[in-house]
Length: 499
Image (cartoon, rainbow, N blue to C red; front, side, top):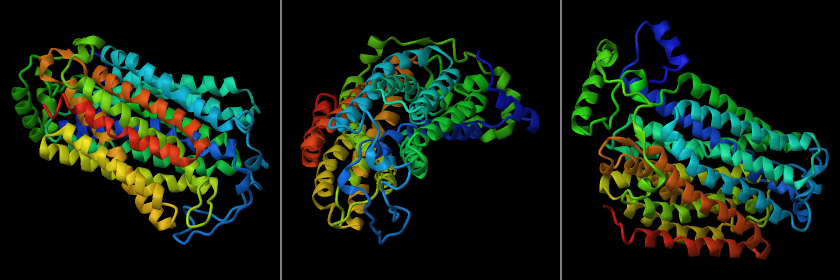
């Protein structure tokens, strides 16, 4: 069995007794929440600095008031701060093909992320998840920070930024399969949709914090917008290493899915241990110590044959394509679109775009709750995607009327776009990774999560790439592309349903 994390050993020594199962679950939820929020925070800088690297000269030196408050739009002279680089841009992204180059940077990151996901999933079911996650977080932080150092080292070579993004993408691939596998190890299926819907708010919290952090230091040089989120994820990796118990067995508790396949007995034992609280320490020696390294992992092909894996993977392909188009390009869109007859600054656009993720938090929780009540994950996900179509049409058509209308419609679009994305990548992946066809004798959580999210990430790579090219023809072309792709999610479920 892998060792107990050093931080937990220290806490045991200080307290003189161990935590209860319930406390461990809360700690695992909190640490994995922080971990993946750090992952997403480190992905946001590239969307925030797009308009600095490739500015629109028509908007230089424009000052605009904002009736809702100074937080979202400040009165600032774009081009007079940051050593005058705001209006000049940054080679090689400030040329006539700058927007396309920014799209290529995004797709390089996401392509490596999606390819790395398939490998990371299998490794996550084979290696110690705590060490695997720690390595991924520290590696991600290093390469995100190195991208930002290009500003301070005055690097203007395209391949440097391309390589940094590709390497960052590979390390970022370690995150999602690992955190979902850890949560799946600690929680059974009861209310999993709601629990994971709330827990999945880490995606939006990470996007919001990453946007605000990157935008807050933009005036001191765009490089800091990468370095600070990079340092944040490294710190998160240290916390994971010290305090995350990846498997209940590693701290003396039985796995909620059992090892011999008797899930009902395990659930009863589990509830009994929750009631015992701190006294559970006395009886932990009787727990079979299968540990995190004794169960066999499932191969990629075998995981693909689990009922539902392929349909949900295809649905996530289209869902993530739309979601990541907003993730990477919404701040750029806001900075280049007149809202209420006025343009807003780059920094303000980054702050304003966080409200899309606020809607996403509500959408993830709502989708999880509805799917639990109806016991219909597929129908819930498909319904949200269909509702996303009119919400995006309304946002594009009427979002420029006023700032208040823009905010309301943006949050509604975020709710419907991120709802199915959150549901599929959390509760659905965990359900399928502990599917009855595995008979409780193998680990497939990280592998199944990687297949589903890896396929989705291929769509995530295509979305920003297509946007980079389509935006040169006008934003209507970008939104039409998003409308057209949403219905394909439903067709993915036709042969599957909610079984």
